[in-house]
Length: 402
Image 1 (cartoon, rainbow, N blue to C red):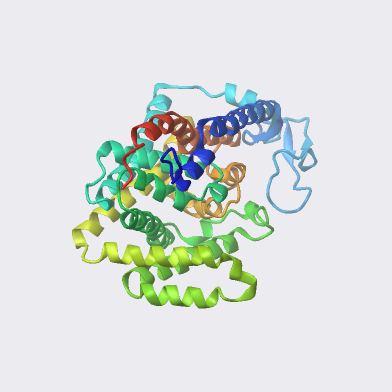
Image 2 (cartoon, one colour):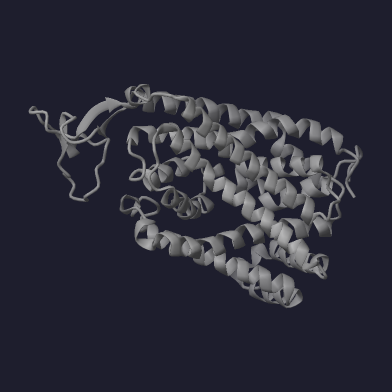
């Protein structure tokens, strides 16, 4: 601790998430997003309008059996009115949308389930803290955690920042560590449980759009999913066994493995992980079934609400004929976002969105509008809330650390 009473961790947190440093990338992001939107609105594409209603026919010039709506070589002009594609800009497509009171209702429902998602997270924070965090404190922790995750998570370090946020609200390091690890465990456990249920309800043949093969890192989309799902399954299994059965043995194995020369430089971080596992195990011993049921129930409520947002936004533009498949595709898409190297999945999210839902949305030109609204509710909302909450929270919690 230095002369002004600030810890090294606090100074590091302030330097990474200071309002000045935060606002610069946020403003750049908003300007860049606005420019991309303006550019895309003027970009002409070939929209499917139905047999006999267009001036162009699809020729499949590259032989991949997937219409590339932005490639002029894929289409030929027909003069007899028998085409089923029309060349038009995204702005023209959006102007053709007829907004109704039903559209407003669906968007309000999307906002409502976004609120449900956050409410579930806030309640889970209350449960995992055994009521030591008030509703207001749980609100602050939840939104600041989401805020930190949205800003270059690989640099900021989501887990360490989350532990600092919780600790600054007055909880001991052991409890903060346990909350962070259990939160991650339950999020991944929900995913592990839901995927088999989705396969049973929808079937695997409709879940992996062929047009996304080789779109990410040159791999088939099905392969990327199974790699991601297998990694999540392995991670949950290791954490669960280590926390609830053999925490010290887990730490011993880690230390032995990370003596190898080519990975020895990460040994200090591994020691910290081993300590976190041991602390978490001590904190969680003796917790009753009611505690776990409430925490996992809140997790399921939050994630179920999260995946409803796109369904409601899509319904604001047109009739969705298969809500279940639209919902299920989001679970598959989430693996892509989880392993995305960009902050908040920026860039990757928009590409994945169009690829996963292109065949489920009747008017392809609306995908951009749906994606923008979705990103506002799932990403930019937390950037905005974080910049508002952070300065006041830093002042109000200045002397609260345990």
